[in-house]
Length: 205
Image (cartoon, rainbow, N blue to C red):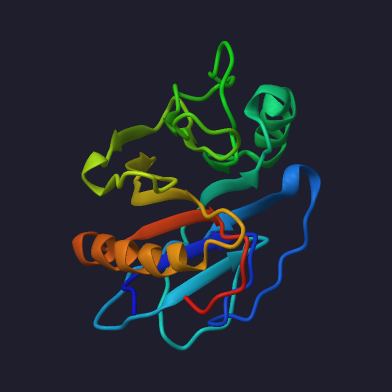
């Protein structure tokens, strides 16, 4: 399947059989478990700062704190996001359903975000925020029209990884298959990939 991919999601994945409960802002706070893969393939699902059992991906634990959240409008969630990121010392935020943005989009202590919004439609939208101490390079070559996903090459401290924020609307099961193909392509190009997503579905990745 995928080489060195970590999926952080509000959904259930058959690989790790994980169900994540909705919390404040439907946020999942995780300490990312970054993987270094040697001749093995698989998908690791991270939850609550622990490495879930898997016999497919050998991992090295690296402190890379990430917040994944379906915020249902960044316009109304900005203050709570800033407090949550500070409380959990998040170095990166992968957000879904940012909705149409109004006014300033910057968050305290974070660089200006990478966004992808729906065109002439309400709802949806994805974003990547990283701390001002990090480095981020957009990976526009993986951008696909009408697909709510944004990708970047991020370096925090000595840890470098490709990260993506992905949103799949309810009922769009075929988009999960398209996402699988896209993730496979990215994993062939990069050794370490982290995805924060809201898939609105139960589907085997």
